[in-house]
Length: 477
Image (cartoon, rainbow, N blue to C red; front, side, top):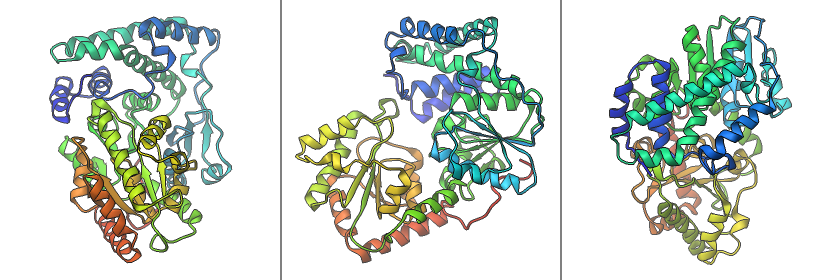
């Protein structure tokens, strides 16, 4: 499969400089997507490429025939905040932003982009804001002419991508394997843009706040905001890669000064990148403290291993995934650790069968007992040591006051991770023996307390942890 380094992507992106929407689509959807593995590419509608995808698309359109799209919102608002409703990280980020906007006596529109119910606790925190939930498949409604126009436009963008990538080795394989998936991203981006253009046609917003600009629905919001010249504020969902540096937003909010410097190196102005304490810190830390029963410095070792899936295009290959899991399992066995000492938290897209197979091959019969079954805040309230490859659980480890160990195995290289490691943000190991030795030392409460203190000091120095404040957006938003 085609694989691009950041350096190659930077050179390619120069061809499409500027903020014209179709050029941004090509950079974002082609160069970055082809260097990544779509999480849901193996769903049924993609099994036979366009032969299975197009019938599924027309069947979905047939299912909403005759339905009108949601009408324009006539009540005027000052700010809009978009939440992908069932993603806790987004709520933890944007609920404090909504609170700070309310304190300015402004009218806030919350667009809840999933059909999942809003919890009573969240509703209490965003009181006085107006919540709008788009109708199911609302982006597919509207005239047949508009649907066919977006269909044709999507194919034309796909062909442009083929043309501009024709001299790059592996492009034909990439398009043959991912063409239908890329088409879906383009098509739904156009449909959501059409949807939000209509929905927000009566608004004169002072600003828009989002978390995942990389999701097509929120990316479409940014397109509409650019058209209307509304300032957009993008709060990072995780640690950034080159994809995020192609953001359309006017301001971007990072988890650390390391990430801020990454954006500055990739052409962002100092005034547009902010690392002064990510809003998620405050709501998420309170959740952890409410659930915690034992101080991280007290008692035996309690390890949370935050696993991540192998993604070949990003350089984290299946053999490295296996080696890392073998190292964690091997270290746990050698130290005699069981479910009372270690939990394994798989990424939502990971297949637990793969982990259990690796564990079984190494004689760990009770591996299923290690798998976390609760929310991340419960795991972090229980743990006092976090192990990860490159997960944002590394940031959350600082919020929870745990020690942090990075697994720097193999050839996998993540620019932001390497700099965080080099700046003393956590410990790092490069083999099973090193991991075993470090975990053995961390079983000593005094040693663990010292490492946690050093880690938290680095977190404060790098602006991962900052003193609490309530206003997360510059004036005016």
